[in-house]
Amino acid sequence: MPKYRRILLKISGEVLAGDGSFGIDPERVKALATEVAEVAQAGVQIGLVVGGGNFFRGVAAAAQNMERVTADHMGMLATVINALALQDALEKAGAPTRVMTAIEMRAVAEPHIRRRAIRHLEKGRLVIFAAGTSNPYFSTDTAATLRGLEIHAEIVAKATRVDGVYDKDPLKHTDAVRFSEIGYSDVLSRNLRVMDASAVAMCRDNHMPIAVFNLNVRGNIMRMAMGEPVGTLIHSL
Image (cartoon, rainbow, N blue to C red):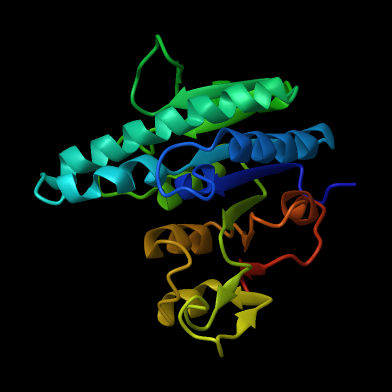
């Protein structure tokens, strides 16, 4: 029996690139979609936010001399490409899916309307929220938190390349220690950078727990949804 009835799953764009550094790996997207579909079939309502790093990292050098607003808009459009790819894979896995964009592009996807998104979830559809918040200077972490709050999700689940929150970067320090749980204020005061500070503060102010776990371990999304101790739980201690 799932612990969470409704979750907001945040996935980095780099995950969709698989072993590559750029673009979309069809096999990785298929595997991810299969796993997400299994969780949905277990009765969990899922909203998703996907980053755009697998595309935008590839043009980052060119964007260095751009105005920040222009570069951010390019990043938002990259998330739409990923959302459409993930929608295709999810529907092939048997999970009806809708893409809703914060920047209107009606020929491609539905505009983001909160009540319609909730209705989709209630009808058993997955909803992928694309194009961030439509505002520059806001990350997809912040977009994920905002959408999670809007749809009344019970938890924001950040699926990443590491297996939780550490006291320092585990990719650089072999003696890094992982937390099984930690408070919002500790994450902010220690500048642990697991999510943008604005996203963590928004979760703190609205009592929204955050699960941080390794997406590359098969079954971790299901374990998290079932309430098993996977990764790190950020909440009010």
